Image (cartoon, rainbow, N blue to C red; front, side, top):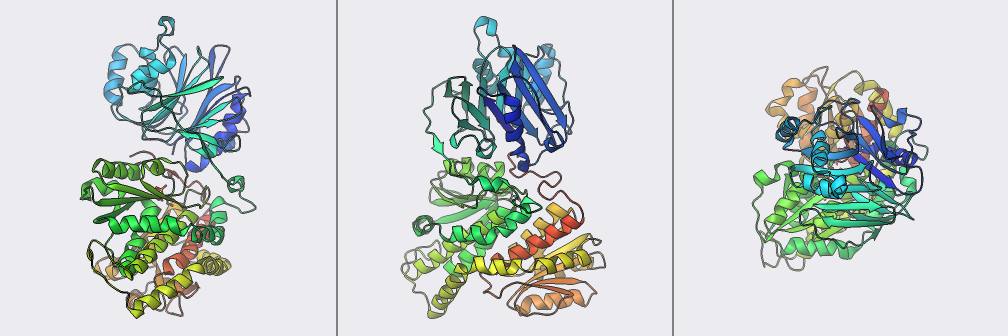
Length: 610
Ligand code: F6R
């Protein structure tokens, strides 16, 4: 999604902006642009396409803003690319978000003589700022920006510069913007990764905050009230190696292979953190988990874990549906699962829960992101930066954390149970369940090793994709029980990077309609843990209709046209060991098809709009 970078300091800004903006490419975009101030003039360059196709950006000046655009209003084009400027070419602005009342504002501004060049919603903002901006009467840029922001509806992170003032003004509402504090210089970025090679000192802005950065100082105010804000500087510890491919062809492949290492980190997240959230879950009358995309699939898997292991009915709701569905009160706990901590739908659901006086928790990868700041409790994933748009290592980390939580609650059940269904009852773990829990705990410790083993199948997976997945364009992914979300995630990975059609569903659902699609152009991928008899009968139903099937198997089943074997583990742990197999299946298919693996078309890493 759109990326913003600003720099004010002593160096030539355009090369710093160029390097910094490249670090935001992972978010997904279709056009880019830069604006600097020099000699009391604005210098602008922008275009459609990728920054990586440009050798360097050379603009004079040491104050500037830049942007990668992910189109919402108006197609990708040079005119629609940001920065946008006012009629007098004195001010320039970049924006991430959507201005909801742009049509009525645009009409009013046109009536007042403003000339619009683009089809974007963003352009109304710069003309509105122009309306208020009267430097000759002592109205400064920040005054005009706050007046304009108080007149618009919608979501935004913006940065604005004026040819007449040595400053950058930034502000946010429901879109991320962070300040970086360097040695005699300042940065503004959509996330910390944009400026991390230069400084790890940061202040994330909250909604309705505006920052004015000038050569020697910065000031943060609430643009609704005009009051000064006193914000703490956070120091981020981040491994720089994460932004290089380290010999892998793509970030996605590197991130798939990082999983054993990253999962060791997740296994070492301290027990107190897990216990604290487990306690909060126990104390709540109702528990919802809200998430979207891949994070939703992790949450859906955990729904089975909470119910099977801890006998706890947790409701998982897609964040974009949350307000329509959730029944909330002050005894409800809502847990947001979001790797970025900035996904619009998930933040909206979490804020809705907050308004309804719920307790808020989150499982988040990016430190200091908005989700962490609005939550009462957060578990940080520690997966490191994920650059490939398709989530891989952050997904398996979420699974690991959620399984640890469910196990913690299951063990607590052996002591005192206080759950929504069994409030204040005492229930000792039966020997069976107790044994099962120790087996699962043992397997959980070995997950990094199991994943390493699963990754050794890469050559076989590659050859299967070459034989089966290039010419056929439709795939069904089926799984049962805990592996129904595995099927959804397998299909999502496949479609997002191969652009082939893939649908995930419960294996038992297939015969209720979808089986009519089985043909030479519709293959099936089946997830089979420990020779699960029930799913094997669904597999037979497909075979008897001439359907081709690839089995991803954690056992010995041999009913398939091709089989990818992963280590034999319990059903409970199987979603973790299936992940590398279907991630690689999607990856090698996409490579063979020549797709843009790390930045698939139309996609954004962090979806910060509705
Ligand atoms: C798919 C993918 C997306 C994200 C979704 C939520 O590979 O990455 O579906 O999972 O946009 O993102 P977060 O977890 O940042 O809230």
